[in-house]
Amino acid sequence: MVRIRLRRMGAKKHPFYRVVVVDSRKGRRGLYREIIGTYDPMPDPSKINIKNERALYWLGVGAQPSDTAKYLLQESGAWGDFMKSKGIEYTPRPKPEPKPEPKPEPKKAAPKKEEPVAEAVVEEPVAVVEEPVVEAVAEAPTEEPVAEETAVEEAPAEEAPA
Image (tube, rainbow, N blue to C red):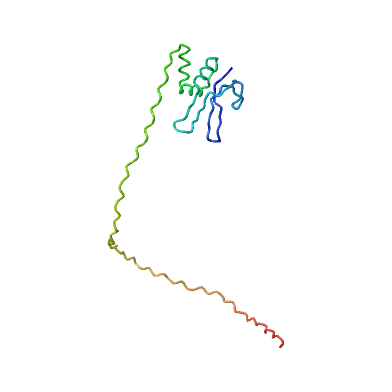
């Protein structure tokens, strides 16, 4: 069975896809039969390039698109052409309206810088409440036996011979 699907290319965290026709038993990086387009999801809006005549050929011989590939074929118009060639009435879904760009806020004029005016700081008087004075009772010093200092006689310094 032949499928139309995406093959991932590009660098890490910067994907780029090729829309390829491949045998369904092959892996994502497997050998493909033909490249019929590209898809770059990174820019806003994403870029889709499909060769519609080649896509119509492969759809005509029985290639089944993956869900993502079918979406890309619908966006390019190839899917609608294929459905009309089969005699099936197909109405493409309406494309969403582009989001309006946010309007930039008008720049406000910078306020004039005036020299600071010295302001007098007036402090309100604080009521002082006198507390009664409590005298601390002096405790009698405890007498500890004082050890007598032992006299240590220093040895006379030796004099160097002259």
